[in-house]
Length: 305
Image: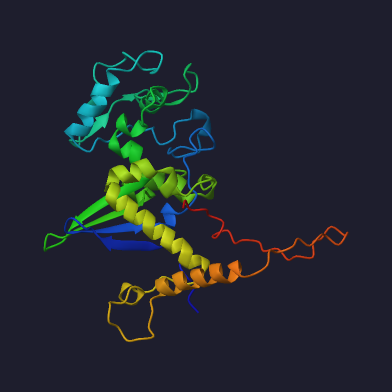
């Protein structure tokens, strides 16, 4: 008997309301409790564990997506002070073109020029990130796009008819290229990084909104809330064709979503007609007579209302 694959992910797709585009989202990652553990156990992306270096994923510098991204970072770099940036004034330029023709941040020593070391007075980490927080702005306005998106990734595929498929997924080792396989450790593949108190789509709401637009993010959020309601009723997501039947369908047929809403209304009505419950005290041996239910790990994820 075949064993189920261990790397399965749940995905959802829907059409864009304003353009010829299909959006695809990695629901398994977006609803997980992954969090960045930089300085809290992150082992870095070298060939061996190096948490003491506190370099995170900054060991190789950042690849800029285009000239606009590069110019924005250069402009911000000119505003950094020596108190904010350990490598302030060490290089005439912070971005250069490598031998492959790619725009990348320069290295200082063995890491990105913007990385502050553990010995720096302002603390370790990205100087752009920490400066943004000190100045009360979102770090995504200061950092290279690839840096603030990690570990999210957007892929756009243009089909033969011009239709675009845009996928939002977790960033895996293979997305780093050949060098990714040499990493001793990568955060989206290790349970040590799945220790957050919020799902990723909440923790990275600003980043997701920037990547897909406010309208698309709100539609994704609405779906995830609907998904949570259906999961609470132990209902698998049905096909869209039967989830929302068209007006005029055969009498007696109702969609899963309408059944759920009708059931909720019936429960509220039923509870309204019941007397207030009374509390049953314990029986003296440390166990209450009322049974308790332990939620499953999946149902323990709280979604915003």
